[in-house]
Amino acid sequence: MADKTQSSEVDEIGDVAVDPAADAAGLMDMLLGVVRIQVLHAFASLRVADHVADGARTAQEVAEREGSHVRATYRLMRAAASLGVLSYEGEGRFGLTGRGRLLRSDVPGSLRAFVLVQAGHAHWQSWGLFPDAVREGASQAKKALGADIFDYLARPDNAEEAALFAESMADLSSLTIKGAVHEADTAGVSTVVDVGGANGQFVLELMTAHPHLHGQVLDLPHAVEGARAEAAKRGLSDRFSAVGGDFFVGVPAADLYLLKTVLHDWDDDRCTTILRNCRAAVNDGGRVLVVETLVGEIGKPDFAVLSDMGMLAVTNGIERDQEEFDALFAASGWRRSRTHPVGPGYFALELEAV
Ligand SMILES: C[S@@+](CC[C@H](N)C(=O)[O-])C[C@H]1O[C@@H](n2cnc3c(N)ncnc32)[C@H](O)[C@@H]1O
Image (cartoon, rainbow, N blue to C red; front, side):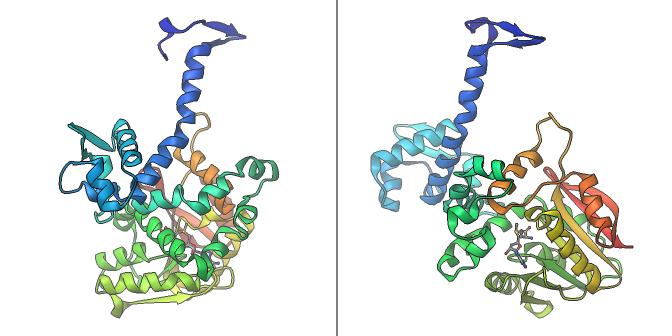
């Protein structure tokens, strides 16, 4: 339908050529985004990728393993095949594609937890009130969930969701950490604090690459147990500790602070507080490594400006461009010395104290 030769009408409004049929098809395709994400959500939740990991299976077999409704499971798998997440092998059997493999629970680089969180309860409820977030200039998470997202995740009743959130951050990190670790300058560094470090993926990878480093995660009290467990799993507990605290109150002393996808969760004032707390506690000659996406040229396809909508909807944060980051750094005693790409859409910004 997008082919102009088949469109019912091509017209002009001012200088702009309009093609209502093609435009309607384009909008309808965008609307299917809601279906795509929920197909992935159910696919991840029912562990379909795990069930077909060792060979193609029918929906009946998957439904029996999962205890789900047979016909609905078939319809889900058929939709997943149309999205290229499963392959159709004939005679009712579905196999795994490269994309589908990334929704297995047990493979490096898995994005399963990320899908479950992005399409899951807390995010979905907040997105449901998105027009009001734009009207009011603030996330409606509090209205939707009874608390801002991080307070919501800190509630003991939501421990499972919080653990999944931390896992999802680790999923996302797998796309950028390798590049960030490669670029990190650890000359003269012996102590590293991963501020808002969740499961500690970043600092633990850095410690693996540089065996002289001692690492620490500072995160909310409910979140640090996961970091300790991850350090133990990697055999790094002797060089690692995790502190439950509040980065708006203070951070432990360090030679290097890691701030990966933390500043984008907060408004300018809150970011300045975090950065000033790092400045107040940093050891002489110490640095900060910020990892974030950067907003690019307006009007071009841009991951950062779409991620920015998620920040407005859920966390009340902001994705920023380079200039906006530089203004935050200048307001809190830091100066950017380097920027380098570390993964799809993400950059490491290295800061030195002024
Ligand atoms: C978007 S996640 C980023 C996690 C990790 N840096 C990464 O990139 O995977 C933000 C983290 O900040 C933590 N956090 C939120 N408020 C905090 C606070 N006041 N003090 C310390 N950590 C906080 C959250 O628990 C969460 O782990």
